[in-house]
Length: 107
Image (cartoon, rainbow, N blue to C red; front, side):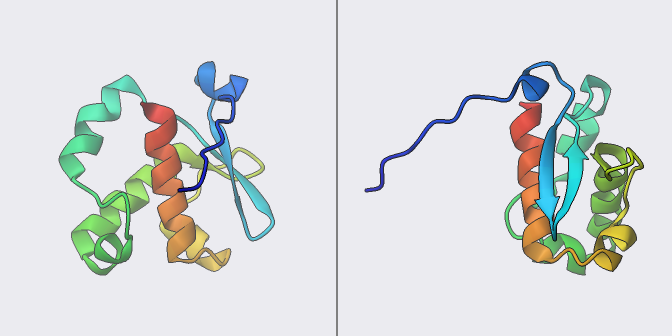
């Protein structure tokens, strides 16, 4: 079994200002979920792992777009949506990494 290496939590995460996600040489900021949005996020019941289930279902696809728009910012601090992510070359693994990071830094 491989030995896990523990990395310190970045100060930006501890202060609630977010963490970064690198996709295709672009840096995106992922913000932690606001307390007022936690119940909505949990009730959306999105897949955190495989994004195939989220993207192929039109209702879930809209929910993914809502969380991207609300919690992922480009290098100029502009929110991105699913269409922007696709136009910037994101793949299904990049979307999975966003969802994972969103959950990791939020709780």
